[in-house]
Length: 96
Image 1: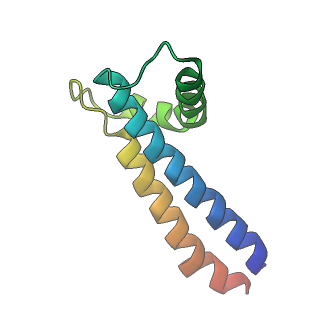
Image 2 (image 1 turned 60 degrees about the horizontal axis):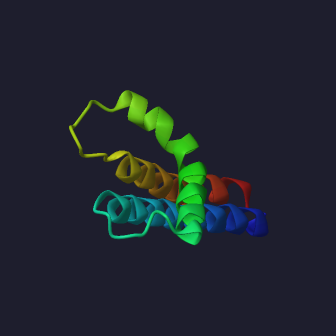
């Protein structure tokens, strides 16, 4: 069971970094720091968008409009943090 919980925790940890990377990339894109015409940069941006948008879309639908400020990645990171803690402190002790 430990291997299963560790793998789930690792996947959530990797997804956390993907969310952070997506937020940073969106800032760089918004401030025109990255060359959007570059094919490699476009591929990275497309990957980050496709990897995070399905999880962020329901949060964006619920959140009120805050103008140009999008805090949905922060909300998603808090949810992942809660899931990781809940996994190790509540579920794992019950099944081990």
